[in-house]
Amino acid sequence: ATDPRELLTLAVEAAEHAGRLAAEGQAKVGVLATKSTPTDVVTEMDRAAERLIRERLLGARPGDSLLGEEGGASGGSSGVRWIVDPIDGTVNYLYGRAEWAVSIAAEVDGEVVAGVVAAPVLGEVYTAVRGQGAWCAGERLRVNEGVPLEMALVATGFGYAASRRAHQARVLSEVLPRVRDIRRAGAAALDLCALAHGRIDAYYERGLNPWDWSAAALVAEEAGARVGGLDGAPVGPDLAIAAAPGLFEALHDLLAPLGADTDGGDGR
Ligand code: IPD
Image (cartoon, rainbow, N blue to C red):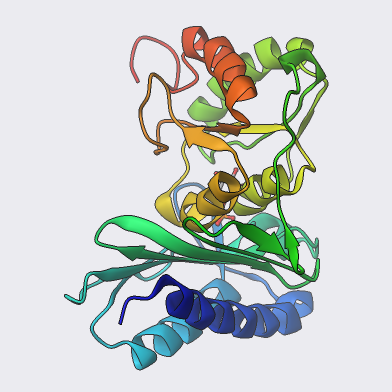
């Protein structure tokens, strides 16, 4: 069966279980390995939490496939694919901060239909089913509407590579003078959920991976956000922009001429 509500129930169970495991291990965690750069880290807990999620989801639904941040892709032919970030906000996790989350999305035939973002230390679980709204603690979420760019609280994030960061700083230097203020919370999934919750007004970031955005973008969309890239492109690794529709346009038009979907210079 591919009833999105059933997929969500399974995802929430797995996310909460993995979240408890990771929360218990947070105080004593250390860096296990580095990935793209020395500051792009993976902890033992990223791997343990992803293993648990894989076992739970594929144990219940052996025909599904799964894409995980740590373990990569594994195949199945049911048409259902799980997209998993065991710990989004790994650097926050490593530093004993609260802003990290387990993120699980369920895709059916290429479309995300259900998603959960569970932040155990914050005590918050965000869920969405396509067409059925976004929820947290029994409350239906709604993005802030009608906020002009100059009054917008805008969240963003940065990649791990120095060259990308240098350009992101240039883009930010043009954005910062034109908005209310900037936040950098350190977990893309929670930024998108904060948008859904009305705790920020807009979000943009270059360089995200599907496990960072898949579940949370559905939460944001179901709360009324427009989520996408530049010039009508879907959200993708080049650029993610998310906000209520009017503000999306304004932020889009600010970011486009700055080359916010590139790493600057003459290349991409
Ligand atoms: C990172 C966080 C961060 C964002 C990075 C992501 P990770 O995910 O979401 O906020 O700026 O682009 O890679 O590495 O902690 O799973």
